[in-house]
Structures are given as C-alpha cells and as structure tokens.
Amino acid sequence: MHSNRYIFIYSTVKVIIVAILLTVVAIGLKPKQQYNIKVEKMQNILASVNILSTTKNAEELFNKYIVDQKVIDVNGNEQPNLKAFDINVEQESKVPADKRKLPIYICKTDKGETKYILPTYGKGLWGPIWGYISVNDDKNTVYGSFFDHKGETPGLGAEIATTAFQAQFAGKKLFDDNGTFVSIKAVKGGADKNDVHGVDAISGGTITSNGLTKMLMDELKPYENFLKQKN
Figure 1 (cartoon, rainbow, N blue to C red):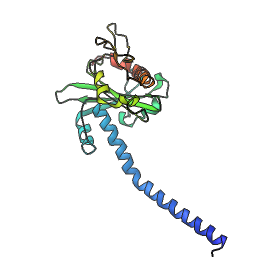
Figure 2: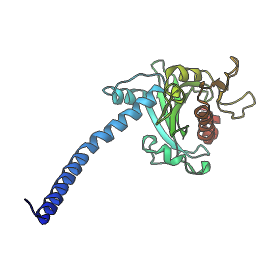
Figure 3: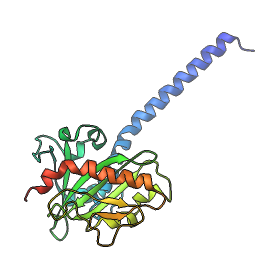
Figure 4: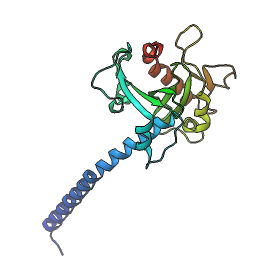
C-alpha cells in the first residue's frame, strides 16, 4: 500500500506531464487553427459576391476576385498602411462610429463588374451575428450578402445563415430617392414586394431579425460618406 506522500507526488507529476502535453498540442495546432479561421473568412467574403468556394480553393479564389482592399475612416479617407483583412470588425463595432477603422474589399467579377464588400457585426438573440454586404459600383444597390451567427436557434433565428434569406437582399437599396441613407430592414409579417429597403423578417425570429436590422444600420451608416463618393 502506497503512502500519502507517494500518492501526492505521483498525482502531481502526472498532472504536470498531462499539462505539458496539452500545451504542446495546443501550440502545435495553433497555426492550423489560424489558417482555418483565415480560410473561413475568405469564404464568407466570397459568398457575399455569390462566389462559392471550398476550404481548398478559397485562398486562390480570394486572390483572384478580391483585387483590392483598404481601410477608410468615417469621412471616407483611406487610412495608410492598414489592410482590410487585418481589421477586427468585432472590436471596431465597439468603437464610436466616428472613430472606427472601416474595412472595404473590392471585387472584380468575371464580367468585369466592380463590387464593394462591407463587413458587419451585431447582436442576435443568443449571441453575436455578423456578415458581409456587397454593393454594385453605384454604391447603393445590394449585389449579395452573407450572414452567420454563433448561437441562434435552428429553424428560427439561425435562418439568417440560409441562402433563401440572404437572397432577398439582392437588388435592395441603401439610399432612398432623396439620397438619404436608410439601410435595409427585416420587416415583421413580410416586406412589400415593392419595398426596396425591406426584406421578410424571419418567422419566429423577431429578436434576431431586429438585431440584423440594427446591425445593418449601425455598421453600414459609418460608410455613408464613402458610399456617396463618385468613383
């Protein structure tokens, strides 16, 4: 029968060995984890301009179609030495709108059309929601969208991540006929078919829909000066 001293030392050594092994594994996997995060972000950005990709070809397609990226301030002035991909949109969403770093991705399609991709980040029912909105070179008409979430309810709020919901955004307008920024709203009960600023809210997902509406207004409004700039 072992003494208490032996059991204590044995347990301590065993815990230390396991901790060291877990640390080594975590450090070894970190580059792979960072690469996977990078690839997923590329896939999301491409999805907002209706370009489907896989984990294997996402980087190739991103480098092919995203021909430029930049960071601007709220006045539309480009910020030197900053790269859109490096901007943490979640952190920037917590900064006052007039002080944010605003990333923009510029896509050139196979037809030679220019699309501007703007990231968004907000709050759903159970956690964060985020996405990308792409607009045509008129900087007003939505070309495509991509949304995702961390923990919305399957079949309800999680519907924002479906292609059926996201497809509604194509052709919608960010500005009204007077040139006022009005964004796009998820309308409970369904948007009028002629409403260029509304999409159908998610049935049973009112809080998520409202969160999406707020996210689009809060996150796209700081781009207003850039969107009004002539190309």
